[in-house]
Structure formats: structure tokens, C-alpha cells
Length: 324
Image 1 (cartoon, one colour):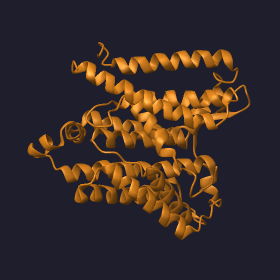
Image 2 (image 1 turned 60 degrees about the vertical axis):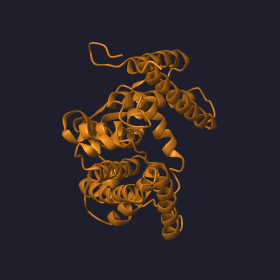
Image 3 (image 1 turned 120 degrees about the vertical axis):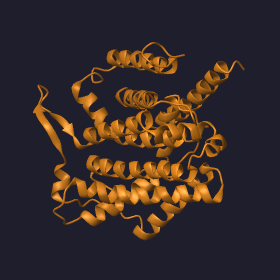
Image 4 (image 1 turned 90 degrees about the horizontal axis):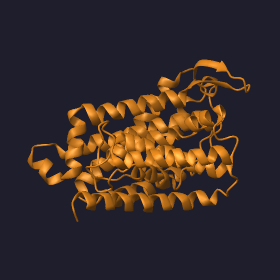
């Protein structure tokens, strides 16, 4: 169901849930609706949003990629290693990390296309291969050393609020906005986006219509790799640390956010707005658990429940629309 504003019923439902949970947390915790908490949410969940944009496109195409945590860390590790002791800038950091991620994404695309094996099998394999090579070559050593220009970060329109904290457009927020805008343009305003939807809806029909399936797969998985590299820079700017095993299991969190937003795991259906709402709901839930002092172990339980519930809701909605 779509209303006159073009917003689907699932998206309205997510928005309502966010408002209800946000309202409850506002009463349950004095810290939830503070400027500092909202600002921290934007910065801390920028990486999740960026990766969700990449995975959104992969799922729409009818594929799946769960190797991106390894791609993030590899891109990040190489980038940080190469910029140590330099007098560069963030353009160099994004070029290095994004380039490495793009190459790894193209490897996934080539394997998926040539081996004719379900993409989940391929990316499970490359996840382990990438991680294994990284741990072997780095010996699991953490990186803490960053050049001074990287540690200073980026802050536009900076101001000091009444609470004494500095606010402004940080590197994380600027990158988040740029990635969301780019993804929206690709999927809603270009022929490539329409072809990705078509390929996800019916790959064989798209092929018969003359769509270059391999080229589309290169674009889709390459974009996921690029987003992984960009996310690597964002995470580095946030924590100023590179830990080779820090994102193990993070693929489930990103997948939960995207499918919660109504994107079909079999391809062809979903919206970027839904994905952003899914990210928001997951961020609010996890932030709420922290503010209420609930053990972090429950975060994993909540993520698993979110995946099950969201997939069930999407499947039910599709059966209802088909009259089954």
C-alpha cells in the first residue's frame, strides 16, 4: 500500500514504531533526547548507514554480500598503513581505502558471475579468505598511529552549545549525507538503478531484454566494496584504531537494518527510505538498551529477533499483495 506521498505502509509502520520507542525512551531516560545523544547517534551509526546503502543495492539486485566486514578492515588497514607519517588529507584516505574496497568488491562480482554459485556461498567464502589473509599478513596487530591531520578530523560550522560540547558537520555526517544522496540518485534517477531493480525481479527476463548481467554485477558488488572502503575511513575517524577482528559478526547488524526496512532478500523490492528507517530503528533500539543499562549481550538477541520479525513481515506482506 502506497499513500499519496509515495510512502509505503511498511515505511509508515516503521516510522510509527520509531516514534513510539523514542517517546518511551524520552520518559525512561533523561539522556535520550539530548542534543549530545542525538549527535552521537548520527556519528556512531554513520558507518552502519553507509554499509546499509551498499547492501541495499546488492539485495535489490537479487544477490547478497556478507563479506563486507572483511573488506572494511582490509581497506582500513591498508589505508592507515600507507598514510602514516604523511602530510596528506582525507581525499587521499578515501581514495586509498575506497580503491581497495572497490577491487575486493569486483573480485566478489567476478566469482559470483563465473562460478554460477549463489552469492551467499561466494561471499561466505571470501569473508573467510579475506579475514584469513589479513590476520596472517598482519599477525593480528592493532594499529593506533595516525598522522596529525587525520586525528584532527573535519568539523564544519562548528559551535559550542549550552552543554559545553562542540557540535558541527563532522566527517562522519558529511560522508553519510553524501553516500545517501549518491545511492538515492543511482537507484531512483538513473537507468542503472532501474536495471538493478529489473535484474533482482527476474534475472532471466532482464538478460533476455539485453541487460548486461555481468556489468550490473560488477557495478553492484563494486559499489558494496566502495562503500566498505568509505566506511573504513569513517570508522577510523571515529575510533582512531584498527583492530583486525573488530567487525566480526557485524554483517548481521547491517543485514538486519536493511531487511527491517522492507528490502526483499530475494531481490527486486525495497526502498532507500525503508533502509534508512531500518537503520534508525536499530540505532534507537541499541542506544535505548545502552541508556537503560541493559547488558550488551542482549544487543545480539535483539538483532536476531529484528531479522526474524522483519523477514516474516516482508514475506507476509508479499503474500498478501499476491493474494496468496
